[in-house]
Image 1 (cartoon, rainbow, N blue to C red):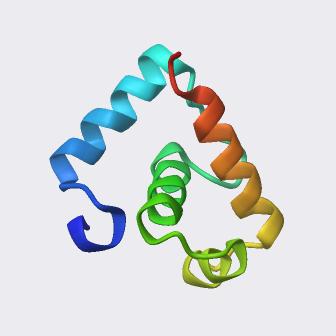
Image 2: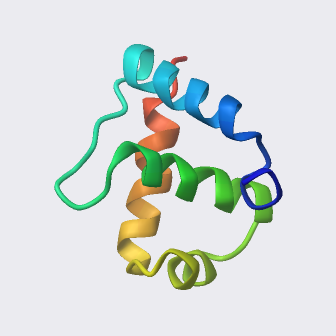
Length: 77
């Protein structure tokens, strides 16, 4: 996980927990919080296009864009 998301698994889980508790990160009907955060971090770490991230996660371009926007807004300011 460290290579593709830029973080260790324990840090990833802590970040997910913090975003859920403090930032309001919530699962949706089709994408859970773990995958939303993974999509966000993967795009941030790799700087890949939405299309390439969509291929990697087997999701639509719209879902990827939505997840990235959602997680960035869920971050406590």
